[in-house]
Amino acid sequence: MKDSIIKAVLRIFILGSIFAVFYSVIVIKLWDEQIRLGEEHREKVSKQSIRRIRLPAVRGRIYSSDMHILADNIISYDIVFHPAEMRQPGKQKKTVNYIFASAYRIGTAIGRKSFLTPEGIRTHIVQRPALPITVFKDLSNVELANAIESASDIQGMEIKTIPKRFYPGGKTACHVLGYVGLEDPGTAEDRTDYSYYLPDWNGRDGVEKTYDKTINCGPVPLPGLRGSPGNEVVRIDNLGFVHETIGTAVPPQNGNDIVLTLNWRAQTIAEKILADRIGSFVLLDASTGAVIAMVSSPGYEPQLFVPKIKKDDWKRLLSDSGRPLVNRATSGEYTPGSIIKPVIAMAALESWFNPLEKIECDGSLEIGNAAIHCWSWKNGGHGNVDMLYGIEQSCNIYFMVQGRRLGFEKLRDMMESAGIGRKTGFCIPERAGQIPSMETKQRLYGEKWTVYDTCLISIGQGIITLTPLQVALYVSAIANGGSVFKPYLLQEVRDPNGNTLYMQDKPEKMSELKVKKENLEIIREGMYRVVNGEKGTAKKARNEKITLCGKTGTAEIGPKDNRKTNTWFMGFGKHKDKTYGVAVIVQEGVSGGSTCAPIVGQFFNEWIEDSKDDYLKQEAVSQQVISTTGPMR
Image (tube, rainbow, N blue to C red; front, side, top):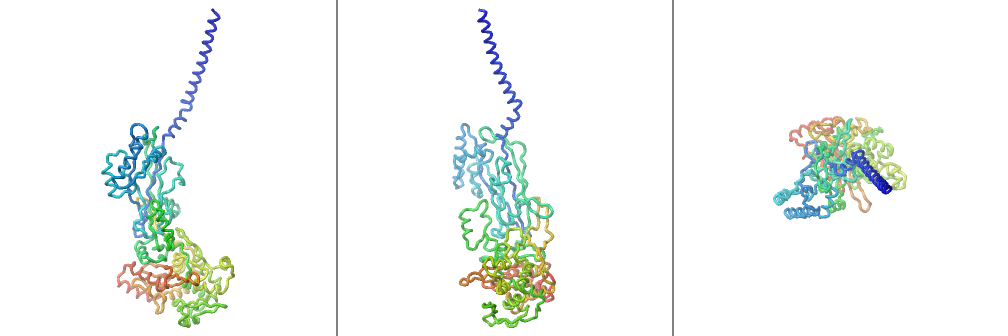
């Protein structure tokens, strides 16, 4: 009996010990999880339920120098649904069906088809519960009114205002401005900082791209057009709906505004005149390198790219034979033809050639077994030609003889000083053109350089190409006394409140023409005669507003059985306190004098707003000797 009692007590003790150990383990585990590791678990739970949302900034505006808005932001009206406010009792499926039916109802009212599907709604609630569902985008005023009238009782519907990039000038200055698109969240640098990423408009071309994030000007880089994003933090409940907003949202900082050197009137007038032609027009402030007008024709509508260009529009632009996406002003590389002749004349003068020496032009120059004609060969040539008459009449024979005397190296040296064959340092993409070289001929044709090649480049033919921007800078250097400036577009940077952060006030010189001032005067005199002389090739550039000096050019391109001509005019002139340099090219024109010169004359007649009396006063002054920064006579 006693033994059985002892055994029973022992069993109870053992069983109690087991239970005590078991409960002790549970207590220790609970203490470990709730006390020691409690903060860690609470943080994990918090991370699972808290979402950080990126809020994009409003993009800065772009102005012309005369304060015309070139790129702005307009309000786009979108219809969005907030799933948390449309939640229905019961399973998630009821909420999904309710949202789908509400979208269909609004679509019927405004005459649009909703592209929402139950599967898409469900995926959105699971993957992006903190974000509203976009149902319809970019509503017209009529659609907006119908939507509000027909769906005012739908709780959770919101008319959301979204800033959208807008180009009020249409195609105007399209190649300068470029365009924007919505940034791809998958490639964004700050993608991992947010649970949900609402993207910025980012620059894809032109100044929109160059000054997108950062503006490198002055001693310190400035924030660009894009601005700085903000954020807000929300908590999600266990069913995937927004439960609450945590703390205060950090508002985004709007981007800085920029003012360009472009003059709106000059740009629009130049584009109008060049319309229906393939070519380019560049107008500079010759004393600084500021770009006043830059046209590439044909152009395109930057608005097509907002928010994303349609496939049909993209195919149309790519297949257009006029290549509207190419900025011919900076990336078009063209054979210069006779506009190179002032460079040859400068090289000759610097080698002490007498400008009064006359060279016989009988219409043709024999070089070895070949002959190169002057454009006047059908009339028997120009006769005895000195330098001024050679520039005025654009005599090929005169310049080929001078080029042959000088030799290739001296010609190339003067071309380099004029900026030929190198990029200008411009802020948007550009090509360098091609300066002639013996190595280039060997590489392209497997042949050595000959005297024939030297004669060709002396009249702007052969392996030499320039961009219209390079030409405008080169002719501006002739006008301003020899300085080849770095061209620029950025005039001013302003913060969103209109305060000036940066002002361009110091031009940057890239090189200097290797020519003495007195020799440059002779070149200007010849260019004055081109426009104003009795036999000048650019008489059609004359206008009532400004006295121009200039040079025409007609370059033959293509195979012998399909020759085409690209036509040029470059020139400069002084009006009041400003000296302008201009370059125009028209592809497949007739000649520089008949195709391009009239374009420049018409432009100045329309752009400069002076009375006839002002013109007569200016003409009287122009008969005096030209200053070092103005037109001749």
